[in-house]
Image (cartoon, rainbow, N blue to C red):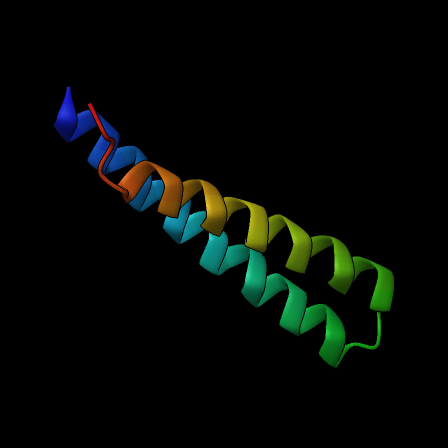
Length: 58
């Protein structure tokens, strides 16, 4: 089971990177609302990835 959680953590992290990249590309194209959307999506995915990666207290 820990391997599944680790794999999910990595997938969420990669998705967060993709979200940030899409946000930066939208900023470069001067599409502010789309950029804000993708940057928020990236931040939420990164938060989820970090929360899964942190050890849990018993």
